[in-house]
Amino acid sequence: MPVTSVLIAGVGGQGVVLVSELLALAAMAAGEDVKQGEFHGVAPRGGAVFSHVRFGDQVHSPMAPLATVDYLLALEKLEALRYAHYLKPGGSVIINEHTVEPVRIADQRPYPDDAVDFLSGKGFDVVAVAATELAIELGNHRAANVVLLGALAEKLEIPSEIWEQTIDQRIPERFLSLNQAAFVAGREALRSPAGTA
Image 1 (cartoon, rainbow, N blue to C red):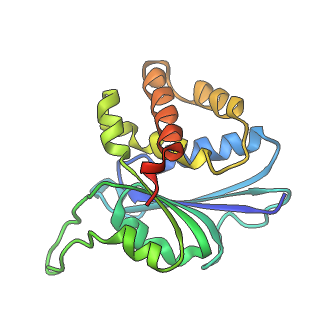
Image 2 (cartoon, one colour):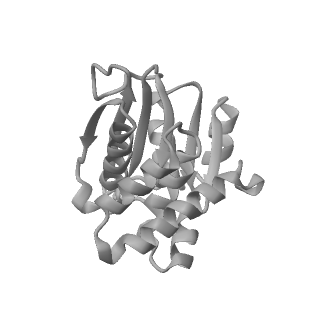
Image 3 (cartoon, helix red, strand yellow):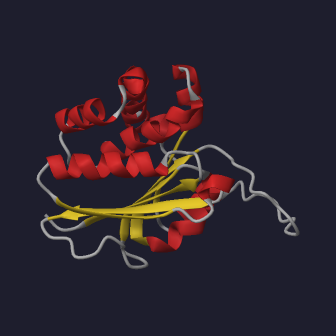
């Protein structure tokens, strides 16, 4: 299998690291060679966090070069714009329809609400998922990351039973049912024609 490159981007506290770990573990369980690399920056202060997960027959580097990423999983709209230059031409973006206003000191530019249209106009395959809303309906907004992972899983060739086993083994018991439901909600959102931008 050729190398598949996924870039997961968000801000501190959104669960970028957990989603990256779940993806890496699932790909390993599927028999792939996996490399993962993370950048936390000023995550404790709500700063940008991103992670590369790459898997295939043989992966030499955890970090994907610019313009080579197959899938960008954006836990927030602004982060989709911030990391779009990593996508290969025609690459896929799964974006949370959620806004996290950045902390502003001197910069008073408006928040870019047209992220989905902008990225679609650049030729990327863009799917917008109301992940935060779905997570709130399930009982906890913090599960939005796993909703998005479920959406990504619909595009990957990792068997469902491996995803289920990975979530069961990695998520603590007290959060397990929430995350199982969040993962299923994300898969279903991607199957729905209304979920496609």
